[in-house]
Length: 423
Image (cartoon, rainbow, N blue to C red; front, side, top):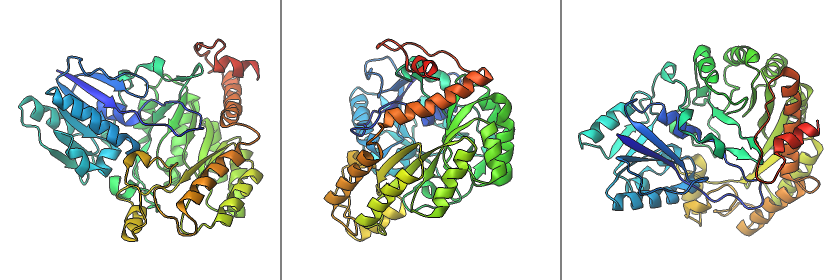
């Protein structure tokens, strides 16, 4: 039996550095598929669709809301050709009712322990319309290594540098942030993987550079410390969302290969300034994540925030506007207040204003979003700042003997060799 798994393309935001990371959700899902099923994977961001391949069953994995309309179109085409299509992934869960209009089946929830039944039903021609396991989470101990063998590794390079591999050490989140859907998707419980299972998976990843995609590692101090201690001998270099800024944690993280962290910058307080400094004191870079358009922000607040970013020595900054995704409090509030004016899911990319802000027009917020990018990167482009971060990590790799030459890109000298030359 041959199963074709597809990751739909989406339109990237204009003006930003464009690169494609290996899809994580698809590889985690693929690991749960029965071993007698042959899996063919297509990342449409990097490959052309192959509708005429000889496959028995089609799966579409959707991560982003901006993928859903393209995913539906792909499914419609396969179903015209008589193929059964099942959807899964985060955005399938957020848009389940609409997605079901384009699907033979939708899978909701985490896949471990549940996918064998789906394939058995398919073989018996008894595929159910909905497999809802959102309230039936698997034991975290059962989560094994992702099936990265489905990926065409040659596709995931940017200017000759292999992109980071995505990896998760935990699931769930005990926090419930205003614009976030994690509480709906996986509940408000932190579910850390056992350290031995984490190391088991890390040992399967040949790439030295990782993005740990957990919502937040700063949820259980003792587990966080044990994680970093276990990672030290592996000499991986990694970025992640927030970690705790306690000295012991930062020291262990630096020893474990922390490259940079994402830090939400929500005000101009000394707390934020000192937190960024503490990361830097341990040699850990910081990419600020800045959300614009909240109801407590005026135009002057946004301008002051942007000025503040230039003062605190961020290595990178990523600006977004509030996107009211379904099943978030932001969506519920704005919908009740009749403030959402754009319901085209292609525009829910965190770079396009789709609602009426409280203290300014939508048009003005859009202008301020662009002003933020232009102002922060006026002296150095985003790619130039990324290059500087990469230089630091290459220096460390050379020191500890883990640096490997990257392939040449078509333009001549690879990005990696350029970095090495400039160390």
